[in-house]
Image 1: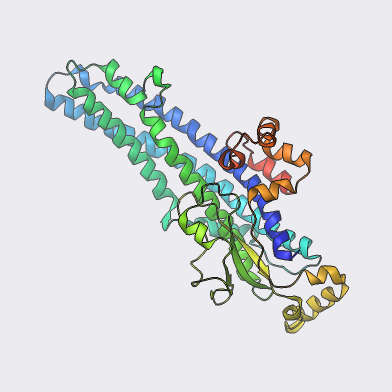
Image 2: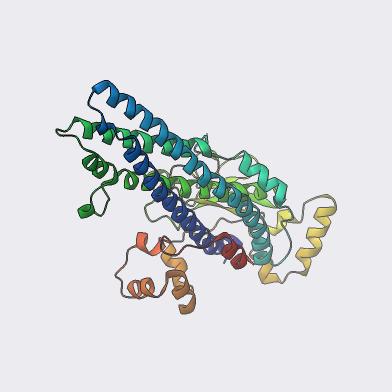
Length: 371
């Protein structure tokens, strides 16, 4: 088994834990959305555009309501962003250190030496962009959508005859018979989840990529891996398993096209980049004091361990492949007892198997698990 396969295997384990932190972030953001709903319904009751008869007076109240909902929404999601951002700094440093430790552990010797450090992690998050835009702009977009949707429902309610506050509130909140899934808040839930998922993946890949770039003397390339994506997009399906030279971005044999930059390559993308270490023959040719140190370390490795340093990309792997290699105790912990039983009975699909929504983990718990 090549070292790259071992690294890919370890990264699946780590990324499942990160998905549980992502689930915790989604849980908190959706709770903030529920609190926001309470606040803008109170604002609607206080401002009540149905309490005046003239159309001009109604328009003035709707405009006042719009300004209030925008203020409330922007503050709510800015708080979500700030809380998550503070944890992303810790997550970036944690993943960078774990990447170094994991590769060194699996290779049997200390090859990677650089990680982000606290200051590097802070700078990475300060400059973080998601799909080409700052994170805050995405949260402002959610706040704008909440505001526009609330105002749109209020205006539709005012067009009804007779218009009354109870009906308008029902339009904004949704109805009990639909479990309030036809209200404004439910409509933004998917946006919230997508932003958090994509941001978490951006942090993960950027932190690891920083380690790869700092260790180009021992890392030959990077490879796209997405065993945790149950609904792989066309672009990720096409790039799965592809590998590129870390220095030049040129494709490995069997890969087409230059390196497209680190994932996520689209919203909701689960692709990660794993490192491909240089073969032992190349590692022995590294010059200077670091080269001498690496040569001494390689000589101390057992022959079988040294043979795994072959410079090859990892083979194909699905989440099912990965899960079947775990012990029963590990499978039960990863899936939870209910989901484990369904999986063994063949009654659960890949999307449900991977989903960690019901299994959140706090940052403190994640740090403890990473050791």
